[in-house]
Image (tube, rainbow, N blue to C red):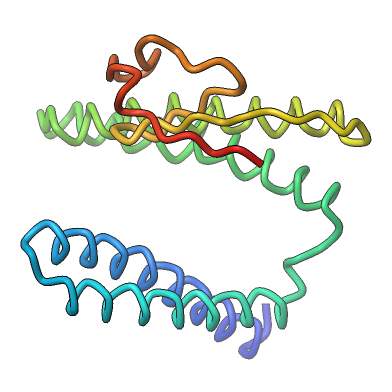
Length: 165
C-alpha cells in the first residue's frame, strides 16, 4: 500500500473511531442531563462520519451492493473466526472475566452478522422485506421475529430496538 493509501486508511479508521466514541460520550452526557453537550458530541460525531465516508470513497472501498455484501461477509467471518478467538484466549489467560464475556458475546454476534450477509447474498435479487431487531446489550441482530430473549446474552425482548427498512 502506498503512502497516500495508508494515510487515507488511517484517516478513515481515526474518523470511524472518533464518531463512535463521540456517540457514546453523547449518550453519557444525555444520561447526566447535559443536553447541549450531548448535542455537541452528536453533531461532531456526524461530522466525523462525513470525513470517514469521504476517505472510504477516495479509497474506492464503496463498490456495488453485491460486492459490498461479499466484502462485509468476509470481514465478519474473519473478525469472528480470527480476531475474537485470539482476544478470548488473551482474556482467559489474563483471567479477565468481563473482557472474556465481551469478546465471547461479540464473536457470537459477529457470526450472526456473517450469516445475515450470507442470507442476503443468497437472496440478493429478491425484494424481501423484513424487520431487524437489535439487542441493546450485546448487539445481536434478529431477522424477522423478535425473540423473547437474546440467544447470545439472555436480555429480555424489551432490550431490543426495531429497525424496519
